[in-house]
Amino acid sequence: MKKVNYSIIALGLLMVSVTVIAMDEKPVERANYEYLDQNLTNAKDFTLEVLEGMPAEDFSFKPGEEMRTFGAQAFHIAYSLEWFNARLKGEPIAWEPGDEDRMSKEELITYTTEQFDSFIKIVHAAEESGAFTAGVLGALRHNSHHCGQMVAYYRANGMAPPAYK
Image (cartoon, rainbow, N blue to C red; front, side, top):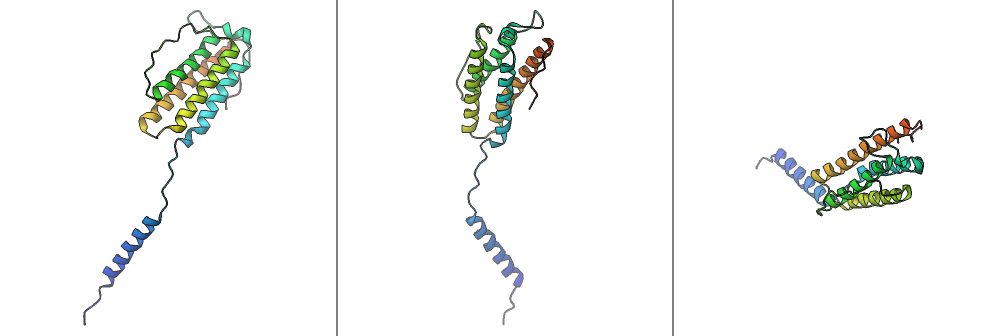
């Protein structure tokens, strides 16, 4: 009578069980940048709050001669988003902002809203990759930098800026 090697049988059953369980697993849905949603929403909301809170007559204010006006800072944010949008879609775009003081407060709010909405839509539709994520984070850092400058313009005017979210 042959001896049964129970270790080999146990190992075989374990391998079959693992294979069956693995085949039964449902595919994992990819996150598709859902983890950035709050950051994207916060950036959009805070930027618009900064724009909306500054009186229209103060959009021409600049703290020093070598600095942009508040309106030009706002334009720079929106135009930069338009530039980032084109870059993230792989479309060539030249950096040609033109006169950064050409838009009214209302026009800047509309332009900024449109560019943020486009940016968020592009991010949601994108395949996740390190290079794309780096581009998104670069755009968010750039936006934060200029929003911070605009907050300083509030303070230079003796105004309390919107609370950061």
